[in-house]
Amino acid sequence: MLVKNKIQQGVTLIEAMIALLVISVGLLGIASLQITAMSQNASSLNHSQAVWFAYNMSDRIRANTPIQLPGGQFLNYNGIDTSLGYAQDCMTLNCTDAQMLVADAADWETMVQTLPAGRGIITSTPDPLLGTVLQVTVMWDDDGTGATGTACSGNPAVDLTCYTLTVAP
Image 1: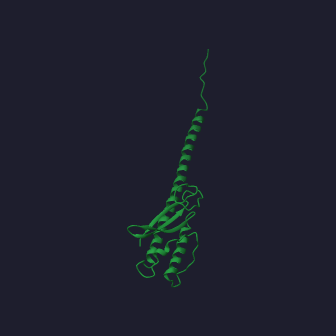
Image 2 (image 1 turned 45 degrees about the horizontal axis):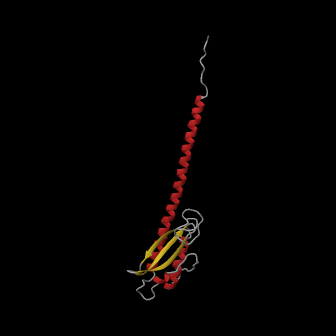
Image 3 (image 1 turned 90 degrees about the horizontal axis):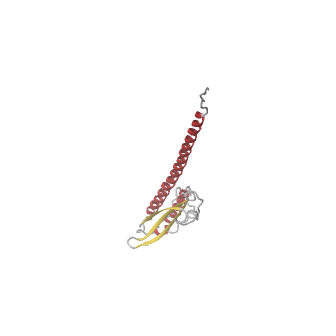
């Protein structure tokens, strides 16, 4: 009785398919990692811009006649909300301190609107040591949920991400 040796066929094809599957899963993981990195990079950029916008406005507040001098505008910045719309050009005109305040609000509005759902608000808060201070708040939709609210914490579908800076006189 003769026994023939059977030759296995197709094993390399199965091995190649398994290797292709493993490589595909790895490439999908790399693609997911790349998308996450790009999202975090955009979030970081928005946060950096918000910080810069808040400090820019605080510098404008301090530059527009200190509160100690007659005509000081410090407390008049209270209530600025970039959703209200401002228009004043002091680049080519000599403006009063009050007009400069409106020009500052208009420039700040232009800056803040570059953020997704960007909005800026200035409010006053009593402080036992410093007197009345101003809270400069920049809000934006950081997670891309389409939030257009006015609050800074809580429900991410409604509320915006915020950066707040305190300005003392």
